[in-house]
Image (cartoon, rainbow, N blue to C red; front, side):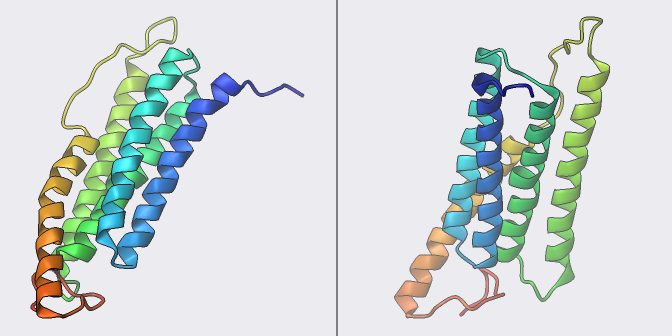
Length: 177
């Protein structure tokens, strides 16, 4: 049996840690703890940067690592933010919020899939891909949305604590609780 090399395994462990943060973000969004959900997505972003840097530094890039990274990106920067935005901003009683969240998730999936296909097609004879990038990275879009979402969450928390009211499950940020 072939012995696993720690330097090959380490970047994948960091990727799976980022995936765990993405899953935790989904859990916190469902539990209506939006601040922790946002923090988890930010930590997933840190893990995403670190795993790639570490894999390149250790020269341990692999097809498995690339696939894990892509799946982790989709969950952490596609599904988790879409659900978070739906649960925190949009009124769940209306279909427009569900449609907007669904569209965000679908387009982030398409974006990552197209990137993977283009990356695969760009590989040269030695198997190394030409480094390229096109479009807006999903992570950048998510961070842009987060900087708009966090101030609304802070404002909502201050308004709720000032009025002595608590947030009801499945209400939007715009409801007067």
